[in-house]
Length: 319
Ligand code: G3H
Ligand code: 13P
Ligand code: ZN
Image 1 (cartoon, rainbow, N blue to C red):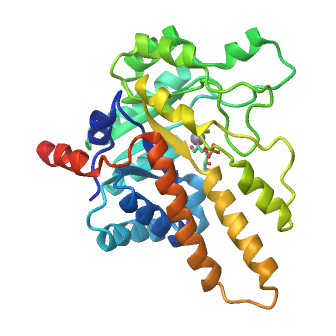
Image 2 (image 1 turned 90 degrees about the vertical axis):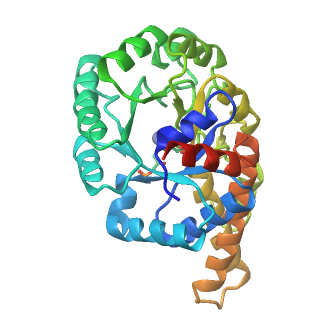
Image 3 (image 1 turned 180 degrees about the vertical axis):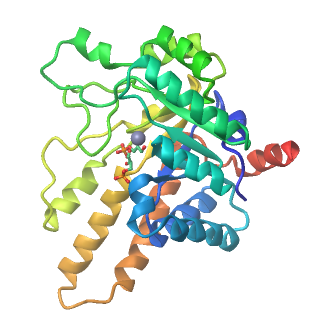
């Protein structure tokens, strides 16, 4: 069942985080639903602009709808990941999405507020919630000073001003993570002091952590043993930190890269071991099963596992 993102956040806030998983195709979708049912977890499916362009936005929407029918027990929200203004308006008018992210974090504070505010007005008119971003994710390099590193992080007072001026429903914050497989060149992890300071300024406002993949080292080793060339510094977030972050108001944890690593490992190993094969289904089947296992393991670490029944009860009480 597709539910509003805010309904899932209400249930999770301060207790656990929802995994927000990116999908691009039906194999990822099937693995995601299977993993969430196996772990009895509510979840968020997110679609980036690139994912919508990979086949066609309608293809992905149809795949999601159908997966919801195949797994009638599932409880999830559908979200636009890193949307620009036009993509947000398109998603809002389609009536299919639970929430959108407007990513104007590269703009000035004032411009970010103005753009976010326009999207919020359009989204709220249709009951859709909006995630916005403040701060600079990534770009935190090993050779820059701590002061400079911290200046890339979201400023708690600015976060307060931003949320109140823009009217956004949740806030993606820069708290030390970055996108992709090469995080933490400087060896640091999540800045918990910064998360706590942002929560103190914005009590009750759901926070979002982008760049949350853990880049499992055994996955990296298997990919490289099967012909891959991932570099030495491939490193991610310690997944044992998801739950402590959730207790500080981080309700949504974005994971995409880790799913790509599962896919890369499965396909590389399969074709290395079966060089004469050219049927796409056997590795596709292995991927769906492996991805389901990965998703279930993440939901356990996020604390969302086991929350399906009570989250459904909460969602039904809202309708
Ligand atoms: O943060 C970005 C997500 O990992 C989506 O990536 O834009 O390549 O689909 P993408
Ligand atoms: P990862 O690259 O760490 O998986 O982050 C994904 C993300 O933030 C999607 O918005
Ligand atoms: Zn992101």
